[in-house]
Length: 516
Image 1 (cartoon, helix red, strand yellow):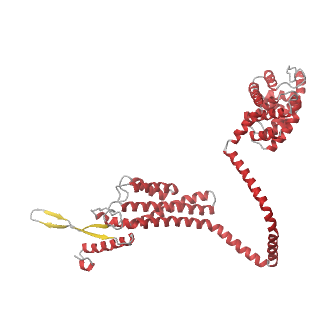
Image 2 (cartoon, rainbow, N blue to C red):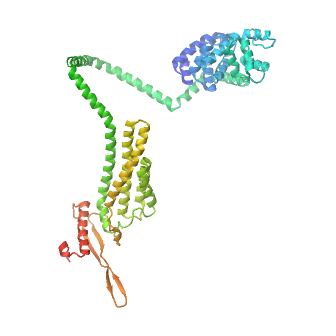
Image 3 (spheres, helix red, strand yellow):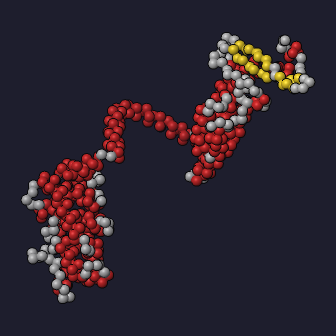
């Protein structure tokens, strides 16, 4: 019986203690009156299977059925009402009222059935609430009898007559809830009897179904972990017992110190408490600022890493176009704008715009660097601003303040980050880039030569009838020395380019350090 109670508890979503108590109540209420021909094990299987089926059939649980059965008592069983009918009535009534109220209504019906028949006869109504043996009629037959006598629909007038006959509000609630449901009652009662034929197998199938879900698996895992903690705790008890004298001495010393130094201990506690309060308040802000700083630092690292190659490409004329042209231009512009104004969502679109920039073959390296710097600034600013705004908002008004602060912070951070990214992007392009007309590819290895094609100002030659425009092109080869990094090489190129620009504007080559 105990094993069946535990199994039924799993099948009916209730604990073992509830089912153990219910099995004891059920044994006392139903065993001898309804199942005297069965042994205890057989009765346990019948009770378990029918209880599990009623839970499944009426969308209730074992705990509610326990309340209903204990409130109902054994009166109906003594009157010969089958267990399937009692469980069916309790299940149907629970769809209209609380479990305990349903059990009370069933008990009141059994107690007042005999008086009701006498009162119906006094009223001149031929309504039989008792059978030939003086017991209450079977429940579906009793419901059908009332409906035939008072009409198809339940009315307030019918309720008053039932109240006068049965003398209890609970009986009126019973008929009102089940009025006209005798056919459904019989069908549900038949389903419970079919489950009884399966016995323990039916309960076991329901229990297995209850185990086949994540919640049950997590409960089992938690129980196993509790067992492990208990085992570890028991293993540590001897060690703790040895440490107890030392811990007690330490506690006694601390108590004596506080008693003998009230002023000092109060001051220390106040200082520590104050520091702790400040730490609690400022820690989220510090974390947010650190996150924003990390985003900006990473953006700076990426730009510094790419700067050498991009500058050399700019010298070759590759940065001459306007950022945003080509097949990916629209997506990049939308990514930067939305990234600065819509926080985290814009950051995601900004990341997509970076991918679009990298995949656009129509852009030079300088243009790509400028676009990526702008997008990265918006992304980093939006993420850092959202974090900082959410923390500050939560300090003012947790909940709504967190949401509003995160949104405003992401907008402000995105705008600021976009501005910073734009400034970094300018390092990769030059003001006179659009004047360049020659675009040479950079070498792929550091030891190869870097060729910078610089176009001089066109010189005009006048002839008698025609005018021709001539262009002078000078090429200079610059070699990267062993051990020379990209930044140093880029500075060398920039220095030479500056000198050549002086020559272009009429400075003497000798003064610039450039020979013939």
